[in-house]
Length: 487
Image 1 (spheres, rainbow, N blue to C red):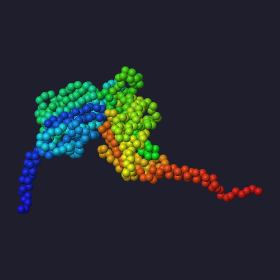
Image 2 (cartoon, rainbow, N blue to C red; image 1 turned 120 degrees about the vertical axis):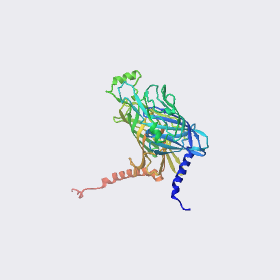
Image 3 (tube, rainbow, N blue to C red; image 1 turned 180 degrees about the vertical axis):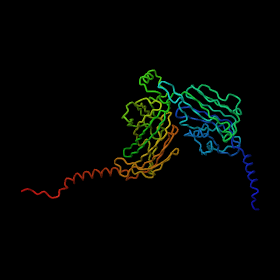
Image 4 (tube, one colour; image 1 turned 90 degrees about the vertical axis):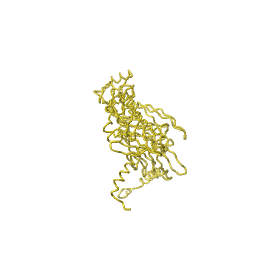
């Protein structure tokens, strides 16, 4: 029977009716979002109590509003009580993003689970007032969206915004949300602001709900730690098989993103605060970093020269096969305390035994190098990093695996002293890194036998040439005619 165009509207009607009857695959019996306020970094943990409304459903979708997604630099989904992250895939819609989470096993009707969705936000706070005198306190503001968006209906939902100290200056009181609550719309208890509970919220990933009910809430709070950012980090990791050594060097530009200093810096006021043990909360006097175990020959200098106000406690290198839980501790004290709006540039480096980061497979002849992406500065964000990995001269079959995709990747050749053909290098760029990004890159490569002895042959060749020249040059006459003997 030929196809009748008149039946198209009927088919569309039947398809739309079946789609409506199919309905959503899940229902949120409860959503609890907890926001841990900080300085440069804010941690957000959202727990979804999920109930399946259909059989054999294996993909749960999480939604993030456009404002929160723009500030999010890291996200991860897990089943509550489990450590293994779940596979996720993101889709961007107008006004929000959808993250499809693949569950470990399909759920049948009315089965439940608790899904934990964790994100890290960077550059999410700002100082208010924007300036502060040397002895004044530091106050920050944080803005977020009131409702946790979801493509599924929610029985109950609440958000907890928690500061580090119970000194909340002010917070937004939501308006126009009477359909979801008959109680107080926001309450304060110590250092925590609670929005909700809000009941019987429909699926909210649609324009109508966002325009009518979604709104921005702002919390103004005291923060008693400096707001630290690393504007630029250039890390170079150089592998030397001849010296059985790995050299790591970081060029760091540190920035205090707290309220800018009002007026001039007073050394007397600084000494007074130090004596009274009441330093300004927006001032950074020192840093403490966790470096790898077994390092040696650490150095720390700035544009003026070597900085002696540092202290290193080296942890011994753990035996192979054991878990390396110990870290070396480096205490850095800049030449001057870092106040709001100030920068401090310095270089930090160290050597480590080759065996601490490189393993060798005799069967395949493959070396595996483990490179940390960064050394985290507590509570800070790395705005931009350039990581350069320099392999031994003559390395071949170079491959690498990263825990998360970089902004860009390039390969090249690095030439240093006593090199002949140069060393292969990999350069990766990242942005908005936090302690959650402090993971390892794995690089595999081979070094042929001739490449191992290439440097010895080239050095021997240079010395042979020099000795030959020293022997031959005195015997060479550059005069036009021979000198005749006088009788």
